[in-house]
Length: 150
View 1 (tube, rainbow, N blue to C red):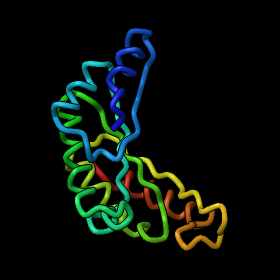
View 2: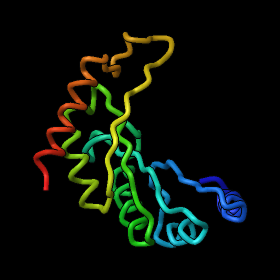
View 3: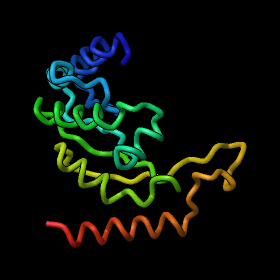
């Protein structure tokens, strides 16, 4: 986390600038979440990229998933809304439903799927890249989940 983040947020609040943050969520303790809320943060976007094993593998940190989930819970407890950002890749595309369930359980209200931007040197040959047809299928799957939930 930027050491001057709270100073920046104090400034944006003073200038009445609506501010949202995108984070991996791992550093959001309840105390920090309350400080964010006090400084005008109403919503956070937290990255979740699969179930615990997949997410930790992508993030290359054994603690990433648990801390991100706790960050979601802490944010909600502090009164901050949470949107999940799931970056769809070949390695995690089969874990969307579990990521949604885990995110809801932790307190997230919204779940969005983003497309992975391939390594510029590899382009469509990047092994994580999902082509437009594959993304369309993922978005259709998410819509079906939306229809069948509740």
